[in-house]
Length: 313
Image (cartoon, rainbow, N blue to C red):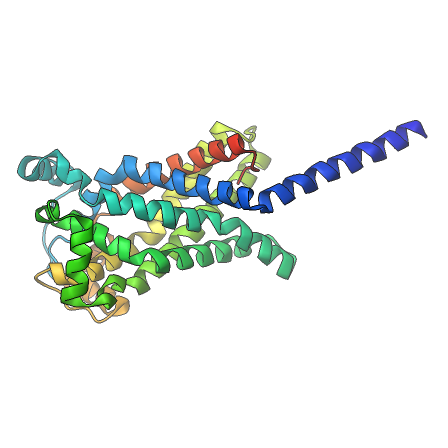
């Protein structure tokens, strides 16, 4: 009798603690921690891998509208260092970090609420709902932050804009190309963000569950490292062609060749004039950046969430 009573009391106590935790996470401070840890994690990952992003953009803009031998990642890196100096590897860093805080906070931050909403609406939390939740959070976040991405890629391609700065460059784009130019490439960017977020977060989420069930790994740094590495590889394979199309559209005015009507037309033109390999220009640089960035982002986010008292992702 006493043992049953104590069992019920402990269960009730556990339920109360769980509910308190849920209420805390739903409070204004809990929401701030939730989105803040996401944004900081993405910003740190972006800052550490930014030089590889600059190289990736340069690789994607090689031989626009042409077939031919491509300069590889290593020689291009040496070329940039020799001709433009080490600072060129950090072109566009300010808008990149600004975007990471906003875009990253929303992209990772909206995933869990979207997943819980799907679970509540459909009574299911399978891989499809995770993909849908990731796609939704990625699409919303990138449609809001597209102007900052435009600034980033423009600055990365032109070292002469370094002295002008991001604010002056934004003013120039609006005055010469119109405010709509800040949403150039928003279609492919939204598709890419939806594909990236769904592949990254759904793969990370699902990989953690599979690894816990089928290996001795438990919640902790080794599990986070393994799951984030898998997520980085999967997301690179899926998003490289979309990322290349997005970059071409955003830099259309900066490129001598290429007059693309939309994302589908751009992909068609690339396939026709540059071949299938054209869609994977800069793919290795994408993985060299996205792989470590995904690992850093998820591992840091898990650590920060633990520090502020939030559940693991």
